[in-house]
Image (cartoon, one colour):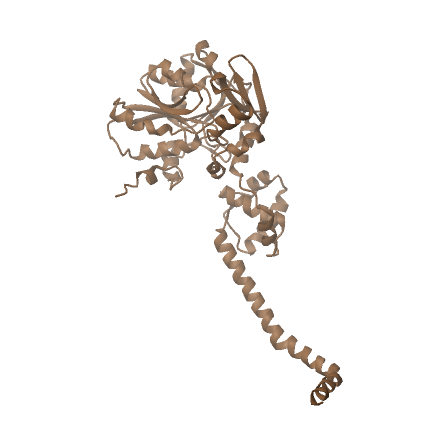
Length: 418
Protein backbone atom coordinates (compact mmCIF):
# COMPACT_ATOMS: atom_id res chain seq x y z
CA UNK A 1 0.00 0.00 0.00
CA UNK A 2 1.06 3.59 -0.59
CA UNK A 3 2.33 5.33 2.56
CA UNK A 4 1.81 8.93 1.25
CA UNK A 5 5.11 10.10 2.81
CA UNK A 6 6.30 11.68 -0.44
CA UNK A 7 3.05 13.60 -0.75
CA UNK A 8 3.13 14.69 2.88
CA UNK A 9 6.63 16.17 2.76
CA UNK A 10 6.61 17.46 -0.81
CA UNK A 11 7.27 21.24 -0.87
CA UNK A 12 4.55 21.73 -3.51
CA UNK A 13 1.70 20.11 -1.59
CA UNK A 14 -0.22 21.85 1.21
CA UNK A 15 2.08 24.01 3.32
CA UNK A 16 0.65 25.40 6.59
CA UNK A 17 2.11 28.91 6.33
CA UNK A 18 0.12 30.30 9.27
CA UNK A 19 1.47 27.60 11.59
CA UNK A 20 5.07 28.21 10.57
CA UNK A 21 4.76 31.99 10.69
CA UNK A 22 3.45 31.81 14.25
CA UNK A 23 5.99 29.17 15.30
CA UNK A 24 9.00 30.90 13.72
CA UNK A 25 8.21 34.59 14.13
CA UNK A 26 5.71 34.67 17.02
CA UNK A 27 3.91 37.70 15.61
CA UNK A 28 6.83 39.91 16.67
CA UNK A 29 8.70 40.20 13.37
CA UNK A 30 7.58 42.63 10.70
CA UNK A 31 6.86 41.18 7.28
CA UNK A 32 8.17 42.71 4.08
CA UNK A 33 6.13 41.75 1.02
CA UNK A 34 9.16 41.18 -1.24
CA UNK A 35 11.36 39.41 1.33
CA UNK A 36 9.06 37.96 3.98
CA UNK A 37 9.72 38.11 7.73
CA UNK A 38 13.17 39.22 8.80
CA UNK A 39 14.69 41.02 11.78
CA UNK A 40 17.83 42.39 10.19
CA UNK A 41 19.67 42.63 6.87
CA UNK A 42 23.46 42.90 6.70
CA UNK A 43 26.34 42.52 4.29
CA UNK A 44 28.80 39.98 5.66
CA UNK A 45 32.09 38.21 5.05
CA UNK A 46 34.08 35.40 6.67
CA UNK A 47 37.27 36.26 8.53
CA UNK A 48 38.80 32.85 7.77
CA UNK A 49 41.32 33.17 4.94
CA UNK A 50 41.19 29.41 4.27
CA UNK A 51 37.44 29.63 3.66
CA UNK A 52 37.71 32.78 1.56
CA UNK A 53 40.16 31.08 -0.81
CA UNK A 54 37.54 28.55 -1.89
CA UNK A 55 34.26 30.35 -1.15
CA UNK A 56 31.77 31.37 -3.84
CA UNK A 57 31.49 34.90 -2.44
CA UNK A 58 31.91 35.91 1.19
CA UNK A 59 32.13 32.42 2.70
CA UNK A 60 29.35 33.16 5.20
CA UNK A 61 27.47 29.85 4.91
CA UNK A 62 30.57 27.68 5.39
CA UNK A 63 31.73 29.82 8.31
CA UNK A 64 28.35 29.58 10.05
CA UNK A 65 28.21 25.80 9.62
CA UNK A 66 31.71 25.30 11.01
CA UNK A 67 30.90 27.59 13.94
CA UNK A 68 27.68 25.63 14.55
CA UNK A 69 29.72 22.40 14.77
CA UNK A 70 32.31 23.99 17.04
CA UNK A 71 29.69 25.35 19.45
CA UNK A 72 27.62 22.16 19.54
CA UNK A 73 24.53 23.63 17.90
CA UNK A 74 24.67 20.82 15.33
CA UNK A 75 26.25 17.37 14.94
CA UNK A 76 26.17 17.43 11.15
CA UNK A 77 24.74 19.17 8.12
CA UNK A 78 22.97 17.99 4.97
CA UNK A 79 24.81 19.55 2.03
CA UNK A 80 25.33 19.16 -1.71
CA UNK A 81 28.74 18.16 -3.04
CA UNK A 82 29.73 17.25 -6.62
CA UNK A 83 31.92 14.83 -8.53
CA UNK A 84 34.66 15.85 -10.98
CA UNK A 85 32.02 16.20 -13.72
CA UNK A 86 30.02 18.63 -11.58
CA UNK A 87 27.22 16.13 -11.05
CA UNK A 88 25.56 17.09 -7.74
CA UNK A 89 25.40 14.57 -4.90
CA UNK A 90 23.84 14.90 -1.44
CA UNK A 91 26.22 14.38 1.49
CA UNK A 92 26.36 14.57 5.27
CA UNK A 93 29.19 16.80 6.50
CA UNK A 94 30.40 16.28 10.07
CA UNK A 95 33.62 18.28 10.19
CA UNK A 96 35.29 21.36 8.73
CA UNK A 97 37.00 19.56 5.85
CA UNK A 98 33.77 17.90 4.74
CA UNK A 99 31.99 21.26 4.82
CA UNK A 100 34.71 22.98 2.81
CA UNK A 101 34.62 20.26 0.16
CA UNK A 102 31.04 21.36 -0.60
CA UNK A 103 31.65 25.09 -1.09
CA UNK A 104 30.43 26.86 -4.20
CA UNK A 105 27.19 27.03 -6.16
CA UNK A 106 26.30 23.97 -8.23
CA UNK A 107 23.37 25.49 -10.21
CA UNK A 108 21.94 22.00 -10.77
CA UNK A 109 19.29 20.54 -8.52
CA UNK A 110 20.22 17.80 -6.05
CA UNK A 111 18.11 15.63 -3.76
CA UNK A 112 19.77 17.07 -0.68
CA UNK A 113 17.21 15.64 1.75
CA UNK A 114 17.93 12.06 0.62
CA UNK A 115 20.73 11.75 3.17
CA UNK A 116 18.34 12.49 6.05
CA UNK A 117 17.73 8.76 6.51
CA UNK A 118 21.46 8.02 6.83
CA UNK A 119 21.92 10.90 9.27
CA UNK A 120 19.43 9.16 11.55
CA UNK A 121 19.89 5.43 10.99
CA UNK A 122 23.60 5.26 10.13
CA UNK A 123 25.25 8.15 11.98
CA UNK A 124 22.72 8.66 14.80
CA UNK A 125 23.00 12.46 14.55
CA UNK A 126 20.71 14.26 16.97
CA UNK A 127 21.06 17.86 15.75
CA UNK A 128 21.21 18.74 12.08
CA UNK A 129 21.66 21.81 9.92
CA UNK A 130 20.35 22.08 6.40
CA UNK A 131 21.43 24.34 3.55
CA UNK A 132 19.30 24.52 0.44
CA UNK A 133 17.02 26.34 -1.94
CA UNK A 134 13.67 27.82 -0.88
CA UNK A 135 11.69 24.81 -2.14
CA UNK A 136 13.92 22.33 -0.31
CA UNK A 137 13.56 24.31 2.90
CA UNK A 138 9.79 23.93 2.75
CA UNK A 139 10.24 20.16 2.79
CA UNK A 140 12.64 20.38 5.73
CA UNK A 141 10.26 22.60 7.70
CA UNK A 142 7.58 19.94 7.18
CA UNK A 143 9.99 17.38 8.62
CA UNK A 144 10.26 19.60 11.70
CA UNK A 145 6.53 19.20 12.28
CA UNK A 146 6.97 15.47 12.59
CA UNK A 147 9.76 13.20 11.40
CA UNK A 148 8.65 9.90 9.83
CA UNK A 149 11.89 8.22 10.96
CA UNK A 150 12.78 9.12 14.54
CA UNK A 151 11.74 11.21 17.52
CA UNK A 152 15.22 11.07 19.05
CA UNK A 153 17.51 11.77 16.09
CA UNK A 154 17.54 14.10 13.11
CA UNK A 155 16.16 17.28 14.65
CA UNK A 156 16.89 20.33 12.50
CA UNK A 157 18.32 23.06 14.74
CA UNK A 158 19.61 25.41 12.01
CA UNK A 159 18.20 26.02 8.53
CA UNK A 160 20.07 28.23 6.07
CA UNK A 161 18.38 29.22 2.83
CA UNK A 162 20.04 30.32 -0.39
CA UNK A 163 18.71 33.05 -2.67
CA UNK A 164 17.38 31.32 -5.78
CA UNK A 165 15.76 32.66 -8.94
CA UNK A 166 15.66 29.27 -10.67
CA UNK A 167 17.63 26.06 -10.93
CA UNK A 168 18.91 24.06 -13.88
CA UNK A 169 19.06 20.49 -15.10
CA UNK A 170 22.40 18.71 -15.44
CA UNK A 171 22.10 19.26 -19.20
CA UNK A 172 23.44 22.75 -18.52
CA UNK A 173 26.76 21.14 -17.64
CA UNK A 174 26.72 18.17 -19.98
CA UNK A 175 25.34 19.78 -23.14
CA UNK A 176 25.98 23.51 -22.84
CA UNK A 177 29.28 23.80 -20.96
CA UNK A 178 30.94 20.63 -22.24
CA UNK A 179 29.57 20.43 -25.79
CA UNK A 180 28.60 23.97 -26.82
CA UNK A 181 31.35 25.85 -24.99
CA UNK A 182 33.87 23.06 -25.45
CA UNK A 183 34.98 23.16 -21.81
CA UNK A 184 35.93 19.96 -19.99
CA UNK A 185 33.97 19.87 -16.73
CA UNK A 186 36.99 18.51 -14.89
CA UNK A 187 38.80 21.76 -15.78
CA UNK A 188 36.14 24.00 -14.17
CA UNK A 189 36.91 25.65 -10.84
CA UNK A 190 33.52 27.28 -10.27
CA UNK A 191 30.38 28.65 -11.90
CA UNK A 192 28.62 31.91 -11.17
CA UNK A 193 25.52 33.78 -12.31
CA UNK A 194 25.62 37.54 -11.87
CA UNK A 195 25.07 40.78 -13.75
CA UNK A 196 22.90 38.99 -16.34
CA UNK A 197 25.63 36.52 -17.30
CA UNK A 198 26.64 32.90 -16.70
CA UNK A 199 30.34 32.63 -15.84
CA UNK A 200 32.63 29.60 -16.12
CA UNK A 201 35.87 29.91 -14.12
CA UNK A 202 38.56 27.41 -15.09
CA UNK A 203 41.54 26.04 -13.20
CA UNK A 204 43.94 27.77 -15.61
CA UNK A 205 42.40 31.14 -14.58
CA UNK A 206 40.58 31.52 -17.92
CA UNK A 207 37.00 32.83 -17.66
CA UNK A 208 34.19 32.28 -20.14
CA UNK A 209 30.88 34.14 -19.94
CA UNK A 210 27.62 34.10 -21.89
CA UNK A 211 24.36 36.01 -21.63
CA UNK A 212 21.98 34.34 -19.19
CA UNK A 213 19.31 34.00 -21.89
CA UNK A 214 21.50 31.42 -23.66
CA UNK A 215 21.01 28.93 -20.82
CA UNK A 216 17.31 29.63 -20.28
CA UNK A 217 16.21 26.38 -21.95
CA UNK A 218 18.01 24.34 -19.27
CA UNK A 219 15.90 25.73 -16.41
CA UNK A 220 13.66 23.38 -14.48
CA UNK A 221 10.13 24.01 -15.75
CA UNK A 222 8.68 23.76 -12.24
CA UNK A 223 10.81 26.73 -11.10
CA UNK A 224 8.52 29.12 -12.97
CA UNK A 225 5.76 28.40 -10.42
CA UNK A 226 7.89 29.16 -7.37
CA UNK A 227 7.55 32.64 -5.85
CA UNK A 228 10.12 32.38 -3.06
CA UNK A 229 13.40 34.05 -4.01
CA UNK A 230 14.99 34.66 -0.62
CA UNK A 231 14.09 31.47 1.30
CA UNK A 232 11.50 33.24 3.42
CA UNK A 233 11.07 30.55 6.09
CA UNK A 234 14.75 29.82 6.75
CA UNK A 235 16.43 30.82 10.00
CA UNK A 236 19.03 32.71 7.96
CA UNK A 237 18.94 33.51 4.24
CA UNK A 238 22.14 34.13 2.29
CA UNK A 239 22.87 35.38 -1.22
CA UNK A 240 25.11 37.69 -3.20
CA UNK A 241 22.58 40.03 -4.82
CA UNK A 242 22.70 43.45 -3.19
CA UNK A 243 26.06 42.82 -1.51
CA UNK A 244 28.72 45.52 -1.32
CA UNK A 245 30.92 43.58 -3.77
CA UNK A 246 31.37 40.06 -5.17
CA UNK A 247 33.46 39.06 -2.15
CA UNK A 248 30.60 39.60 0.29
CA UNK A 249 27.20 38.07 1.03
CA UNK A 250 23.89 39.64 1.85
CA UNK A 251 22.34 38.01 4.90
CA UNK A 252 18.73 38.12 6.09
CA UNK A 253 18.38 37.25 9.77
CA UNK A 254 14.86 35.93 10.19
CA UNK A 255 14.12 33.81 13.27
CA UNK A 256 15.26 34.32 16.86
CA UNK A 257 17.42 31.19 16.51
CA UNK A 258 19.09 32.48 13.36
CA UNK A 259 19.59 36.02 14.66
CA UNK A 260 21.07 34.89 17.99
CA UNK A 261 23.40 32.36 16.36
CA UNK A 262 24.63 34.84 13.74
CA UNK A 263 25.30 37.45 16.44
CA UNK A 264 27.30 34.84 18.35
CA UNK A 265 29.43 34.17 15.24
CA UNK A 266 30.06 37.90 14.85
CA UNK A 267 31.01 38.25 18.53
CA UNK A 268 33.40 35.32 18.11
CA UNK A 269 35.01 37.27 15.25
CA UNK A 270 34.18 34.55 12.74
CA UNK A 271 32.26 37.00 10.55
CA UNK A 272 32.47 40.73 9.92
CA UNK A 273 29.39 42.70 8.92
CA UNK A 274 28.50 45.97 7.26
CA UNK A 275 25.37 47.98 6.57
CA UNK A 276 26.64 48.69 3.07
CA UNK A 277 24.15 46.82 0.88
CA UNK A 278 21.57 47.55 -1.81
CA UNK A 279 18.15 46.57 -0.46
CA UNK A 280 16.31 47.66 -3.60
CA UNK A 281 18.29 45.18 -5.72
CA UNK A 282 17.27 42.28 -3.50
CA UNK A 283 13.64 43.42 -3.45
CA UNK A 284 13.65 43.86 -7.22
CA UNK A 285 14.95 40.32 -7.76
CA UNK A 286 12.39 38.92 -5.34
CA UNK A 287 9.46 40.82 -6.88
CA UNK A 288 10.57 39.71 -10.32
CA UNK A 289 10.29 36.08 -9.23
CA UNK A 290 6.96 36.60 -7.45
CA UNK A 291 5.39 38.08 -10.57
CA UNK A 292 7.00 35.69 -13.03
CA UNK A 293 4.34 33.80 -14.97
CA UNK A 294 4.26 32.14 -18.35
CA UNK A 295 3.43 34.80 -20.90
CA UNK A 296 -0.09 34.63 -22.28
CA UNK A 297 0.34 33.66 -25.91
CA UNK A 298 -1.19 35.70 -28.71
CA UNK A 299 -4.06 33.32 -29.45
CA UNK A 300 -5.10 33.21 -25.81
CA UNK A 301 -4.89 37.01 -25.61
CA UNK A 302 -7.08 37.43 -28.70
CA UNK A 303 -9.60 34.98 -27.23
CA UNK A 304 -9.75 36.97 -24.00
CA UNK A 305 -10.26 40.19 -25.95
CA UNK A 306 -13.47 38.63 -27.32
CA UNK A 307 -14.79 39.24 -23.82
CA UNK A 308 -14.45 42.99 -24.38
CA UNK A 309 -11.59 43.39 -21.91
CA UNK A 310 -8.48 45.50 -22.43
CA UNK A 311 -4.88 44.27 -22.58
CA UNK A 312 -4.08 46.17 -19.38
CA UNK A 313 -7.01 44.61 -17.52
CA UNK A 314 -5.84 41.18 -18.65
CA UNK A 315 -2.32 41.96 -17.45
CA UNK A 316 -3.67 43.20 -14.12
CA UNK A 317 -5.64 39.97 -13.63
CA UNK A 318 -2.75 37.66 -14.58
CA UNK A 319 -0.36 39.62 -12.34
CA UNK A 320 -2.78 39.18 -9.45
CA UNK A 321 -2.93 35.46 -10.19
CA UNK A 322 0.84 35.23 -9.82
CA UNK A 323 0.86 37.24 -6.58
CA UNK A 324 -1.95 35.53 -4.71
CA UNK A 325 -3.17 38.27 -2.35
CA UNK A 326 -1.76 41.79 -2.39
CA UNK A 327 -2.64 45.46 -2.06
CA UNK A 328 -3.31 48.18 -4.61
CA UNK A 329 -0.07 50.01 -3.79
CA UNK A 330 2.10 46.90 -4.17
CA UNK A 331 0.33 45.97 -7.41
CA UNK A 332 0.94 49.48 -8.73
CA UNK A 333 4.63 49.22 -7.82
CA UNK A 334 5.04 45.82 -9.44
CA UNK A 335 3.22 46.83 -12.64
CA UNK A 336 5.12 50.13 -12.69
CA UNK A 337 1.86 51.97 -13.34
CA UNK A 338 0.17 54.90 -11.59
CA UNK A 339 -2.26 53.97 -8.82
CA UNK A 340 -5.22 55.65 -10.54
CA UNK A 341 -4.75 53.55 -13.67
CA UNK A 342 -4.46 50.35 -11.63
CA UNK A 343 -7.46 51.33 -9.50
CA UNK A 344 -9.58 51.89 -12.60
CA UNK A 345 -8.66 48.44 -13.95
CA UNK A 346 -9.37 46.84 -10.57
CA UNK A 347 -12.80 48.46 -10.37
CA UNK A 348 -13.70 47.10 -13.82
CA UNK A 349 -12.42 43.64 -12.92
CA UNK A 350 -14.37 43.70 -9.66
CA UNK A 351 -17.58 44.62 -11.49
CA UNK A 352 -17.03 41.64 -13.77
CA UNK A 353 -16.31 39.41 -10.74
CA UNK A 354 -12.75 38.62 -11.86
CA UNK A 355 -11.25 39.75 -8.54
CA UNK A 356 -12.17 39.99 -4.87
CA UNK A 357 -11.30 43.13 -2.91
CA UNK A 358 -11.90 43.25 0.86
CA UNK A 359 -10.33 45.44 3.54
CA UNK A 360 -7.56 46.62 1.24
CA UNK A 361 -6.57 43.11 0.13
CA UNK A 362 -7.01 42.10 -3.50
CA UNK A 363 -6.93 38.61 -4.99
CA UNK A 364 -7.90 37.01 -8.27
CA UNK A 365 -10.90 34.74 -8.65
CA UNK A 366 -10.22 31.21 -9.91
CA UNK A 367 -10.02 31.46 -13.75
CA UNK A 368 -12.37 28.48 -14.14
CA UNK A 369 -15.07 30.38 -12.24
CA UNK A 370 -14.28 33.56 -14.17
CA UNK A 371 -14.58 31.96 -17.58
CA UNK A 372 -17.60 29.84 -16.71
CA UNK A 373 -19.32 33.06 -15.66
CA UNK A 374 -18.22 34.87 -18.83
CA UNK A 375 -19.38 31.97 -21.02
CA UNK A 376 -22.74 31.94 -19.24
CA UNK A 377 -23.13 35.68 -19.86
CA UNK A 378 -22.13 35.27 -23.51
CA UNK A 379 -24.63 32.45 -24.01
CA UNK A 380 -27.36 34.49 -22.37
CA UNK A 381 -26.52 37.54 -24.48
CA UNK A 382 -26.46 35.57 -27.74
CA UNK A 383 -29.66 33.70 -26.84
CA UNK A 384 -31.41 37.02 -26.35
CA UNK A 385 -30.03 38.35 -29.63
CA UNK A 386 -31.03 35.21 -31.52
CA UNK A 387 -34.53 35.37 -30.10
CA UNK A 388 -34.80 39.02 -31.11
CA UNK A 389 -33.61 38.16 -34.63
CA UNK A 390 -36.24 35.43 -34.93
CA UNK A 391 -39.20 37.29 -33.42
CA UNK A 392 -38.60 40.90 -34.47
CA UNK A 393 -36.00 41.36 -37.17
CA UNK A 394 -36.77 38.39 -39.43
CA UNK A 395 -40.55 39.03 -39.74
CA UNK A 396 -39.88 42.66 -40.69
CA UNK A 397 -37.32 41.65 -43.28
CA UNK A 398 -39.64 39.02 -44.75
CA UNK A 399 -42.43 41.58 -45.11
CA UNK A 400 -40.06 44.04 -46.76
CA UNK A 401 -38.78 41.39 -49.14
CA UNK A 402 -42.25 40.31 -50.25
CA UNK A 403 -43.43 43.88 -50.74
CA UNK A 404 -40.47 44.78 -52.93
CA UNK A 405 -40.17 41.55 -54.88
CA UNK A 406 -43.79 40.50 -55.52
CA UNK A 407 -43.57 40.97 -59.33
CA UNK A 408 -40.57 38.70 -59.52
CA UNK A 409 -42.34 36.15 -57.42
CA UNK A 410 -45.39 36.12 -59.78
CA UNK A 411 -43.14 35.92 -62.81
CA UNK A 412 -41.32 32.93 -61.32
CA UNK A 413 -44.62 31.24 -60.57
CA UNK A 414 -45.87 31.79 -64.18
CA UNK A 415 -42.69 30.22 -65.48
CA UNK A 416 -43.47 27.15 -63.45
CA UNK A 417 -46.79 26.82 -65.26
CA UNK A 418 -45.27 26.67 -68.77
